[in-house]
Image (tube, rainbow, N blue to C red; front, side, top):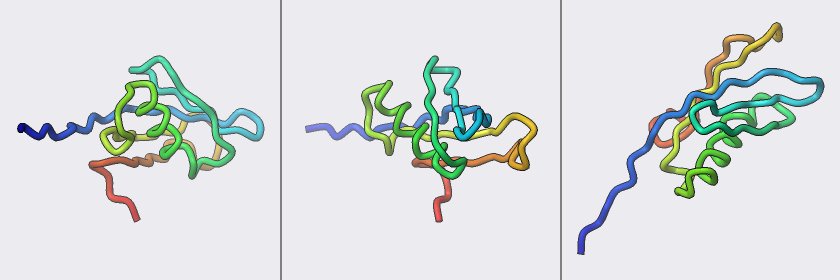
Length: 86
């Protein structure tokens, strides 16, 4: 029996503030979502991408770039198989 290892793919995620929400898009997949805090964006984007692709979330890596005039503008966050999580 052959065991196949899942290969992680990195998806770019853009996030911006809309009122009380952080809205994110995963352009390569044509999908996105929203969270209440910036800290939740990477994990939620990873979950959404995995659901969209019908794969385990640990096989998806996301890199979040914020856009807009907020203090977090330009921040880079990542989560997934290839990222350093604390």
